[in-house]
Length: 394
Image (tube, rainbow, N blue to C red; front, side, top):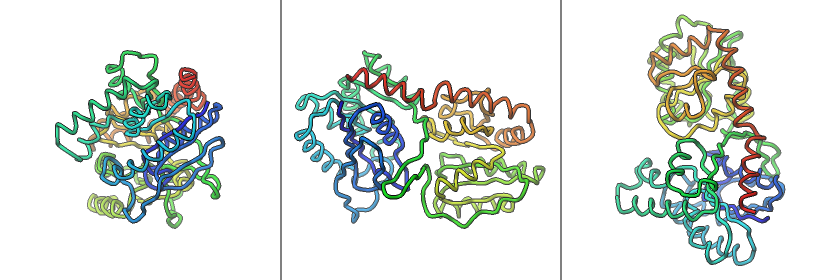
């Protein structure tokens, strides 16, 4: 089979790398499909055997593409549509795999070119318009809702990435057999063309080597420092236990320079600056090094529905995890595989102290977490789901 994958996003970039696109494309090619990947001009080419990466112009003078809806993305999508039509005229594709809003024009072109359509749905687009404060117009939101529902019904296959989204879509479509829940649960290293292997949740310039006190009990958070990640909760919680856990250190990996300054000031105000280290953005190799040194990992997220990609890697890590008891986490986690706490400083402090002191529980949740990952989210499971998808399309 031959497929056209359309990804309306930067690919591959230091900021917000689209892992779902990379892994879907990687496994599709490994399973024997010839793939053309059409994406924005921004980013670095990755080396995937059997995949040809095609780009629209970069338009660097317009700046970088940000997360969420924007006028820049709308402008770039015009060129994405023109390039798509050009490719469809010159090639015979068995199916088009459209990520996010690319499904809108892929749906319109489908009758003209006779391909099968895969809708890879990472989120509800009408909800994005609201969540990113892009518009309050009920007319525009309802238009996107109508378009989204039409695409879900006309697609030959639909992929969703978490149970919440899966349940939402399952209520909207009649043919449940075409609907696949395929979580972003694998974390193979990424090969950048001409640059060797580069794993990558967080890229960026390396900071000087960070000195971790010898024999420290290391609490590690790794990820972005956006407000919904709950870093305020984590710092306040650690402030409640830092004095009695004098051999502990909180290591916060990730974040922009402005975010690091903001939270460093907060740590100083709480009085935990001497036991709190902020790294800023690191290469994935460096980030993985510090994660591997952790006594416990923590995900203090305070809001959200989609399961964070890092949760799957944390399950497989062999390191105890403390996570907030919100739906973003509990779609995957329960009390048998993690120490779940309420998203407030008092309960977070309890969970951190328990994770550092209760060695029996640590062993139990680590063993259960690794078992859960192998059974439900590992690479063989991911490949099995993708194989079923491709069998449906063929």
